[in-house]
Image (cartoon, rainbow over all chains, first blue to last red; front, side, top):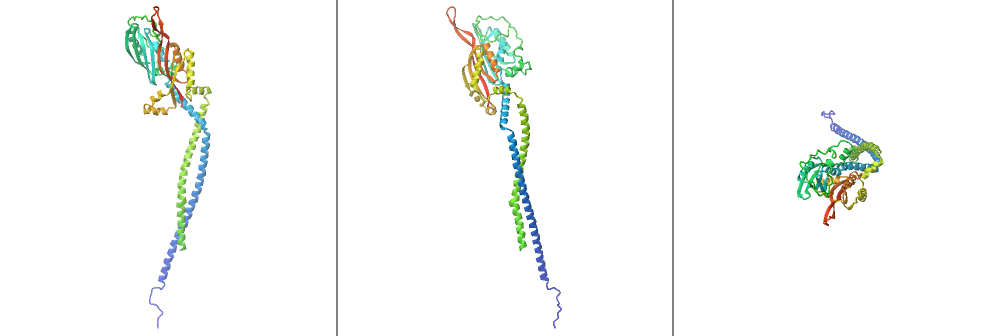
Length: 240
Length: 199
């Protein structure tokens, strides 16, 4: 008689149970993956929608700002701005030109004041090659060499005349002919300075050209007056 | 199987939405934000400029029409050399002098300025241009000095570039019938002036 009692302690359904357990764990992981996928999808969609809406807001904001800028641009009145700019250019250029503007008659007055009665000039050349380079050349006739020396001394002492050079000194019947070349101190013939002087304002670098001519020494010896009275004289009314 | 497919599909769609739309859109947003910041700055500047314009306009309105007219004559928009010659002749005629042999040239200053690179650059940067005008006239020294003073005080800026002054000469016969040349009180003047206009 066969006994119904099994001698094995190993349960018969062990393999099935383990397989079932293994099968249950895979389903859980899949569930988690599905859950994560859904969460990510929702988040991605929400982010996408948010981005889209924010983009629309920014676009409307941009168009509004462009409209404001166009309104501001129109309010500037470009023709008025062009007119004001041109006026500004004109004022700046005018100021610059007025600052450089020279009054050459000043130097003629200086020569009138400084020229001795025993000296006359027959020609004059004035060259302003630049705002700071002004050269004057004169051809003259003096009664004697001493007169030329005295004239050179007077020119040399005046602030408007720089480095006068006397040359071509030649004795003739009518007197002593000579040439003189000098550079002019540009500040002394600036129009603005001469206006300041005439209006009684304090001149910058300018001496009072007509009034403050340095004291002129008398000739050391009596000079022979040439007989020729027809020599043209411009100036010669100042220094004795 | 269904769950696997769902998981893969949701992840793929989430990644697709992010990479295909959200990320490029975010980059566009950054660019637009930068544009908006620039527009804001421009609007701020425009506001400041509007205030400045208002200030300048109120100052401009204080200028009288005659002052503006004088400023325009000081530095005209065009060279208007014919008008200048007429003005010169008008001034000279006041002192019994006549303007002769008028030569107009623009080459003098150009060649001087463009001799150096710095000169050429400064000529380009300058807002005004110039022209030289050469003429001769005759008259007494006193009249010429007065003419010169009028010229230097004229509203339109005229600068003397060169002046050559020579005594006039006249042939005469003395008592013995000998021919000689004597100087007259009238001088001959060769004058070169420079005038300017706004470019």
